[in-house]
Image (cartoon, rainbow, N blue to C red; front, side, top):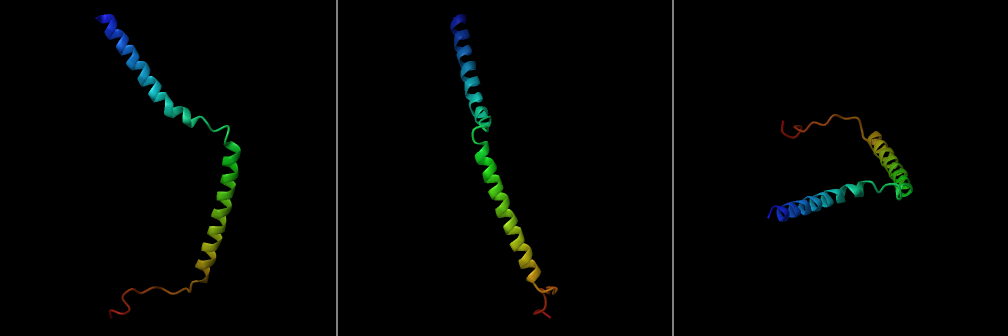
Length: 74
Protein backbone atom coordinates (compact mmCIF):
# COMPACT_ATOMS: atom_id res chain seq x y z
CA UNK A 1 0.00 0.00 0.00
CA UNK A 2 2.83 2.39 0.87
CA UNK A 3 4.65 1.64 -2.36
CA UNK A 4 1.54 2.49 -4.40
CA UNK A 5 1.06 5.73 -2.47
CA UNK A 6 4.72 6.62 -2.96
CA UNK A 7 4.53 5.90 -6.70
CA UNK A 8 1.40 8.03 -7.11
CA UNK A 9 2.92 10.92 -5.17
CA UNK A 10 6.11 10.78 -7.26
CA UNK A 11 4.04 10.81 -10.46
CA UNK A 12 2.05 13.82 -9.23
CA UNK A 13 5.22 15.69 -8.33
CA UNK A 14 6.75 15.06 -11.75
CA UNK A 15 3.56 16.20 -13.48
CA UNK A 16 3.46 19.38 -11.40
CA UNK A 17 7.11 20.12 -12.15
CA UNK A 18 6.57 19.53 -15.86
CA UNK A 19 3.57 21.84 -15.93
CA UNK A 20 5.33 24.60 -14.04
CA UNK A 21 8.42 24.43 -16.28
CA UNK A 22 6.43 24.89 -19.51
CA UNK A 23 5.68 28.63 -19.36
CA UNK A 24 9.16 29.55 -18.17
CA UNK A 25 10.74 28.00 -21.25
CA UNK A 26 8.79 30.41 -23.45
CA UNK A 27 10.62 33.34 -21.90
CA UNK A 28 14.02 31.99 -22.90
CA UNK A 29 13.25 31.88 -26.64
CA UNK A 30 14.63 35.32 -27.51
CA UNK A 31 17.82 34.52 -29.42
CA UNK A 32 16.12 33.37 -32.61
CA UNK A 33 13.87 36.39 -33.00
CA UNK A 34 16.25 39.02 -31.65
CA UNK A 35 17.01 40.56 -35.05
CA UNK A 36 13.30 40.87 -35.79
CA UNK A 37 12.72 42.48 -32.40
CA UNK A 38 15.50 45.00 -33.02
CA UNK A 39 14.01 46.09 -36.33
CA UNK A 40 10.56 46.36 -34.75
CA UNK A 41 12.02 48.44 -31.92
CA UNK A 42 13.65 50.87 -34.33
CA UNK A 43 10.42 51.14 -36.30
CA UNK A 44 8.46 51.86 -33.11
CA UNK A 45 11.04 54.49 -32.12
CA UNK A 46 10.64 56.22 -35.49
CA UNK A 47 6.85 56.18 -35.16
CA UNK A 48 7.06 57.54 -31.62
CA UNK A 49 9.39 60.34 -32.73
CA UNK A 50 7.11 61.35 -35.61
CA UNK A 51 4.11 61.32 -33.26
CA UNK A 52 5.93 63.49 -30.74
CA UNK A 53 6.99 66.02 -33.37
CA UNK A 54 3.43 66.22 -34.66
CA UNK A 55 2.12 66.73 -31.14
CA UNK A 56 4.66 69.43 -30.38
CA UNK A 57 3.91 71.29 -33.61
CA UNK A 58 0.17 71.14 -32.90
CA UNK A 59 0.70 72.50 -29.39
CA UNK A 60 2.84 75.35 -30.72
CA UNK A 61 0.04 76.39 -33.12
CA UNK A 62 -2.48 76.80 -30.30
CA UNK A 63 -3.10 80.38 -29.17
CA UNK A 64 -1.79 81.41 -25.75
CA UNK A 65 -5.15 82.15 -24.12
CA UNK A 66 -6.33 81.13 -20.72
CA UNK A 67 -9.50 79.07 -20.74
CA UNK A 68 -12.34 80.33 -18.56
CA UNK A 69 -14.97 77.64 -18.14
CA UNK A 70 -17.32 80.03 -16.29
CA UNK A 71 -17.37 82.79 -18.93
CA UNK A 72 -20.97 82.11 -19.97
CA UNK A 73 -22.23 81.72 -16.41
CA UNK A 74 -21.48 85.28 -15.23
